[in-house]
Length: 466
Image 1: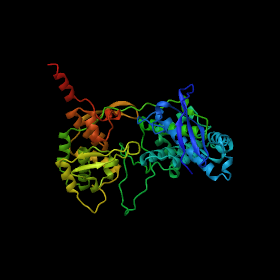
Image 2: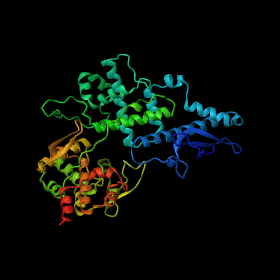
Image 3: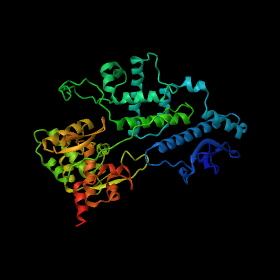
Image 4: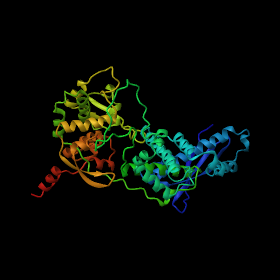
């Protein structure tokens, strides 16, 4: 079977888009050019005759990803149709056009009865090349939708089944409310979470230990497996993924219903980034934690992360092979699918000492890591022990209101990345130079979230007026 080639029509529709044409290889003497039924803006059609996907997340990116997936699925469908055809001479332009119409508009029986809503979800995941993190995030959403379906059956509609036809803006609002407050559902119907747990982590087989119960702020025991509250940013991100799936399902003929057409996803809002100064980092590192070796270890890992500026997911992947010519080299996991670049961060003396302190070549990782949740708990405890308790103003993602909290309460692994970026930016004030060390592309909008113009920079600017 030969390769399928693409080109863009010069004609445009009322929306200003042009149809992608395909040249299908049937045999050496028979190559057929036919319209794909998939339309794109000419500015998103690249020189290599493929759809160019913008790096900035949003509705345009989602639609183009869906169209790219549909074009790939259509190509595979047509190539298979040609391959299994007994009489290749019977394949002509009319035959392929009919096949394309069938692909875009499968029979109602096929759409409604052969595949359930969650069957189509499985097809979507199987046909999409998603990064490990994006796949994980979508599986979290899928479990949530399973739990929502069970909740609806118990709460109001016993015969309720989640289908494409039942998706409406009102049902999306119910799903949004469900995602924002799963704790109340858990307390009312805990059996739902036995079937589809809030967390799907696979426990590592270790000797059983009697752990003390987890307590809430009032000292009450927290039931095992109880969902944590989600902020509006998290829920908006989940609904954005859900919308991408619905657009893909529409393009692939599984539904014609788009409930998001009249539903507005909440805006993702970020507060002012909080980071610690170099002096505070040194104070943390110099605090005597020798009475708690586990706490000391996690503190040291945090200090190292402050010196290399990587995300925690990249930190956990680092090994001794990541050290090349006295520098750490890695490809950020978050962007390696779309924009694989190698980030190289030279190691200063403190970073080298921390590596030497835990040097163990028999270990697969650079440091003796624990779970990310455990890491974040230990960071907060280390901050508290070091007396890093200055008051900071942060945005409460549940209420979207500003609140004042001690620094140690908001400390987390990502604060290390902000600390790296914020402190270097204060010195050089060049986002492109800092981005080369943090893995952000030039002109990245996301970069602005990791830095802020602090009082020292403001004073320096005002000094220009003297």
